[in-house]
Image (cartoon, rainbow, N blue to C red; front, side):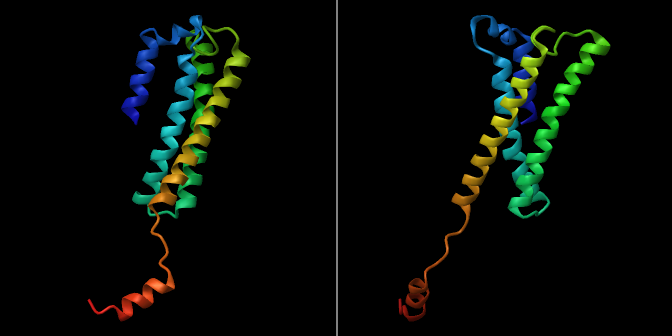
Amino acid sequence: FISFTFMGNALGDLGLYQLYRIGFEFDKLLHFVIPGIAIYMLTILFYHRFEMQYSYALLAALLLTIFGSVTWELYEYASDYFFRTHIFGVDGFDVTNDTAFDLLFDIGGTTGGAIFSLLREYQNRPKPRLAVDRVTELYDTK
């Protein structure tokens, strides 16, 4: 996951962030995909490594992902303020719209990742056995 994040940002720095000029915003793609993958991976980590209940693991992953998204936007602002990098907004312009849409795409990706995570958990959960199956097992003479 971390390598994907670095690779995506590196590709952006190599020129893919400039695709907004022809109508494709690579930045928005990253703001959607990275939180989606993050919430899925963090939920698995919290559930298996820390043996949390699945709902608590998902909630912790959700809060951590949203916190990370807001922290990233604050980092962009601080970087522009202290180092004059022009990464907040689109080349330092259109700051309000860019930040709002970045956070919306972060929330969309987080929601998508949470839904995917819940669907995977539901699929992998053992199915309850019917009482008929239990009775059949008791009297099965195979």
